[in-house]
Amino acid sequence: MSETLFRGVIFGVERFDAELPDGRKVKREVVRHPGAAVVLPVLPDGRLLLVRVLREIFGRYLIEAPAGKLEEGEDPKEAALRELEEETGYYAHSIEKLLEFYATPGFCDERMHVYLATELEEREQNLDDTEYVDPFPVTLDQALSLIREGEIEDGKTIAAVLYYAANSARAASPVPEE
Amino acid sequence: MSETLFRGVIFGVERFDAELPDGRKVKREVVRHPGAAVVLPVLPDGRLLLVRVLREIFGRYLIEAPAGKLEEGEDPKEAALRELEEETGYYAHSIEKLLEFYATPGFCDERMHVYLATELEEREQNLDDTEYVDPFPVTLDQALSLIREGEIEDGKTIAAVLYYAANSARAASPVPEE
Image (cartoon, rainbow over all chains, first blue to last red; front, side, top):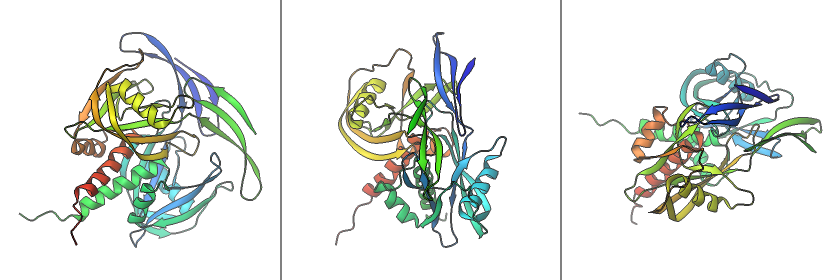
């Protein structure tokens, strides 16, 4: 059983009954979120197309991968393509799943679906009129430095860049011939 | 100006007034969270001491790094040591900052402070009586496989393990002598 405590624009809050392994019943509060699509776009020159996004909560811009919440019933891959085009103006002819994870599973059900987008074609940026998003292309080495220096402060972007780096290193190591 | 919409056990919800770069005023909703300490503990044999944590939201256990929210006024490093000992029974004689990031900065101010814990000494696990946490030690290679296979589904743990892997790879590559 669950009870809605708050219903907002992006998220809601519910209180629900959970049963512990020993049979006790407890009440838990949870932030309900529809989930998010996250895109790591790779430009033809190999740079990652990150963005600077105004985050009103912090009163400043953060460096992030393009991302946005899923619309109701929306396939995460479609959402990734949509958010990429809205935020950067690029359409991706190739898109593949990198990772899926919960952003902060102790109190929130938001699941993040992370895609790698390649074969980019420039179209037109199409932001909501209260969104402030600027392109911020960086090489992979620059992105890794920005993580080490604490300049990239967004968990999903850190996870996506590090995962991509780990796998492109692997891809770059030729398989020894038998 | 901000207005409290909900005040819960772990988090609260506020609505606040933000000013956009063009001067317009907008209302935004935010989940307020005190922040979290996250620990990547390395056992003497080199394995990472992850944990399996019951997450009632999902009705199952997730594989995570030991973590917990900051108490009021608590230093994140102290919180990391405290959570490590409570959840695993280990005290760390050496602890160093790896990373800091926001879990999901679009709507939540939770900042995660990630530490690497080494020189572990076994003491006593000390869980709250509604917490279910089991030790889950893995090698770094196993942890990386679990990430690739989607078995580690927690963003902070993915970021921490990949960051550690990237830096231990670097540390393991000897600097060429001049």
